[in-house]
Image (cartoon, rainbow, N blue to C red; front, side):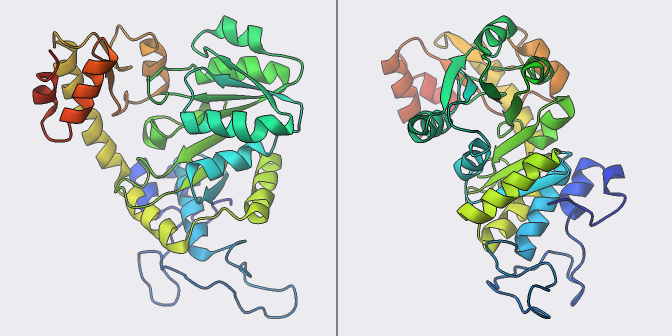
Length: 338
């Protein structure tokens, strides 16, 4: 939904918008925190006339506040909250007609691959996996039937970087929509819509929520035609978050900036340790100059993120590191690798 709560919200900094955008003081009590509205139905003044809310699957005041708030952080006119990141992705994929073609990054999140291949594939959707860090490979993968290019940047789990602006230019020549999964970067570090993307998706379970106690998803766009269709499928398919989930996510977003600053700083310290460790064969982190996507990440992100991946040379040693980190520090767990 469009955020018209504050006329001057665009002039605010990120942290101010995280606290205030879409969240006016409660008109009844003056409460500065958006109330948790659990009502499922709302009184109508007459048939077909209501105050913007009639049934909570369709509209809910707490969900509307979250949608407006996160849309503001993404620089979007329209935002839609869902019960999970995959529910959000499912609604975006419903924009596609059967027999059309989708280009997917070859390092896509496993849940995204499963949804596209196992759920939408049998309905007729065709797709191909491409190294989106290679623009020539992307151009070669575009087909006459291509209507969407789907990318994550950074990716999960290998932290590959894609040039959003360059990919958007290539895709738009074909008339294809560009969807960016912005979960790992968050809108604090990267705003894909400003770089030419048409749609942004999130698993808000991760950094947006920030407390490991709520599952959610989000879709943002500046395209009114896309927004109209997403709003329709959001209501028709009904995979919406509960009001309490929305309230928890708004609580998390208020501290997103400060959490990301600290987590990015922590990741740099971890990368320094890993990069110098003799038992680590490769560190995958876009902040390293040796990373394939370093220059692109530096250009389109305000920091390099808080996720770090690394290789230890073989499966057995990697499993020992993963098992030992349940008890020991990272440095101690690397000592478990012979």
